[in-house]
Length: 415
Image (cartoon, rainbow, N blue to C red; front, side):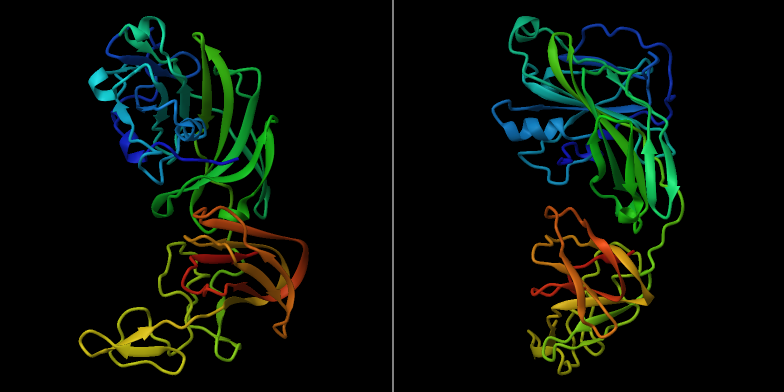
């Protein structure tokens, strides 16, 4: 299942920070503007401390419709023609909101409406996304205001149990919010703080109310766990695609991979030998920001201009002002040396680039390959778990990449 982002986060953050999380019983909205509705808790009370965003999509463009249906309330990573900028609405103290036609355009088109409750503690608050089809007949076609179905929050209490990063997440069924006959659930994780990124699928979709989750996959960056309930319901005569996202919860425990701070090796392309690299090793330090210098052998200059030349492991040429510019040598393999041999079953590779052509190799004490697996995933997923069904006692783990893996990595975690 593709977790596609369609709503630009910054465009959906207009809300009254002083408004209460729970207001009075939400009154039925009166027709106003061109588009109107209300945002509320499942028990009928209004949710004034919410942000609402709406965008219209061209029903002739299936890509936009599909992306909208799968948005799950996350932000758009690639704004542009397939990810239009939404229009924001700020609910009043009763949870009512509306938008004018000059803000939206043709309100008879298909649309996506998203509401997020800003709870304060969790970086990701409860979120509801509705996708409505085109409404080209009836009163709306005659210019009357269009009623968007109520944006109702699903606020389940998630239960997370387990140890050593192998967790079970459970939740109550989404019975208190509008749903169709079938509801599917997906467990996702998203990084928080400076490492914020798109959602990472952890488990599902499932029609059950529990799932096993491997928390080791996202242990390198602060994150929150969420459950998304997706359904299709008939509301007001319209077929409405709905995604309810729970509030985020921090995973239990402090997971630190055994490879944290471990020594790294880099392959000298000329000799084929694995040699100790610069220390500390940038791909085992827990900082998931991309280090453009990569894993370098000692004595090799960084990617910046070097005015003193370079040694035999790199090459140099005259720069614009006559100084020497260092050309970073290629390292087909970069490796992590574990503090002591251990059973390895999971290697998590973080990279901002497409991992196509990369392989994780498990080496023994003599640097012989014991097992290997290709790094698989969609381009720009950033987090790529590589699992080994038969764990082996390993002391060195390498990432093989003929294009030179050292400068394209953010982090490698070994479990």
